[in-house]
Length: 190
Image (cartoon, rainbow, N blue to C red; front, side, top):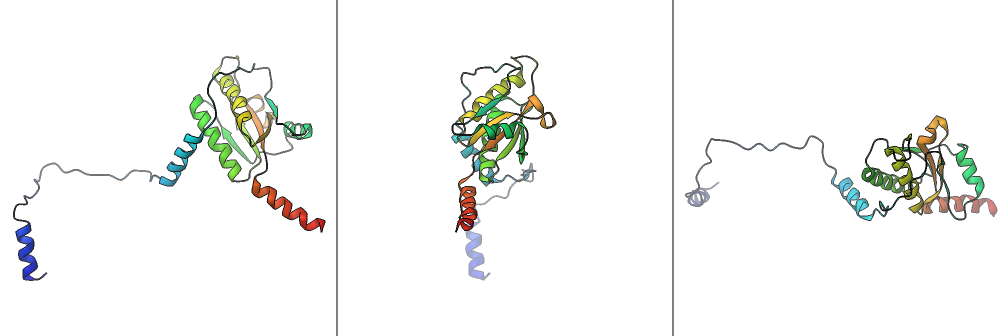
């Protein structure tokens, strides 16, 4: 710096007092770096979550979970029930509150659709009484899965995958998968 700049700096700093040597504040960085994009996506998903938590018909423990969407053939449900569509990914809802199950299921189905996955396994637990927490979650799960447009069918899992405490879910093909399928079969038909 030139002498002129030093004089100007000294004039600007004449009324500045140095900090006392007392307590200093130390700012620590967070242990886990926060992914802002993931947080924004989670908040967006939370705002769009249409799954209801209102009135619930409790499904008795001895009634198996089963659903087949409109236009879905019985053979699809039969193959699902017999484990012919092995799960590509699974979600564990054991010992979680209803609201966190609701959020987790919503994110899980949306992500599975984005990843073009079609066969899912959801572990919800098995209650011994109709009013037990696992059976409440199971009843909500049946209600919520029917609210998804992407869900074709669901049914209880085979004993090797959780039996009465889990269910298989099959999703509709994504638009990308339909286009890929059309492209593959269109080549053969020419």
